[in-house]
Amino acid sequence: QVQLRESGGGSVQAGGSLRLACTASGYRYRTYCMGWFRQAPGKEREGVARITVRDTTSYADSVKGRFTISRDNTKNTLYLQMNNLKPEDTGMYYCAAARGEICSLGAEIFNSWGQGTQVTVSS
Image 1 (spheres, helix red, strand yellow):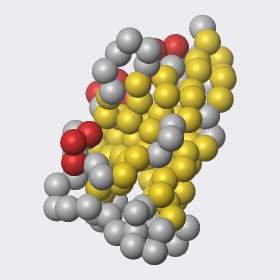
Image 2 (image 1 turned 135 degrees about the vertical axis):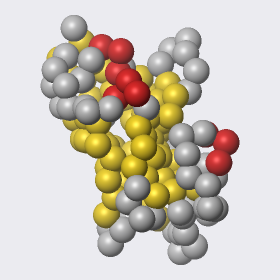
Image 3 (image 1 turned 90 degrees about the vertical axis):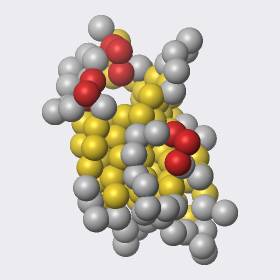
Image 4 (image 1 turned 120 degrees about the horizontal axis):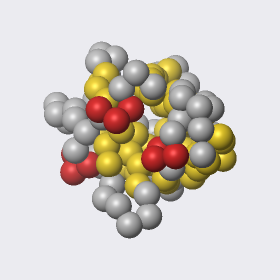
């Protein structure tokens, strides 16, 4: 089973930046797609960004122009650079990996999930 671990969360002031990382491990790690999701208290889980094995990216409208997803396959690591953070970005951020031909922001296609890292943005 692929194991995912997020890091890089923390507390920042509005307008600040954070970079999240997700490291994947496991001998049978294979994926066509990786993504970042977030969930705030009392809200539904939201797809933030995803990236294909060919480095095609897609973002939620709420983060376009502010967040950048990337991957380093030699390190088995996924990144999310978050700039100009807003209080509404606050939540638990999860990385996820999917195997298959479909790569989207839909949580249902992802097979493996990390434990999450907390991001808190104060006004």
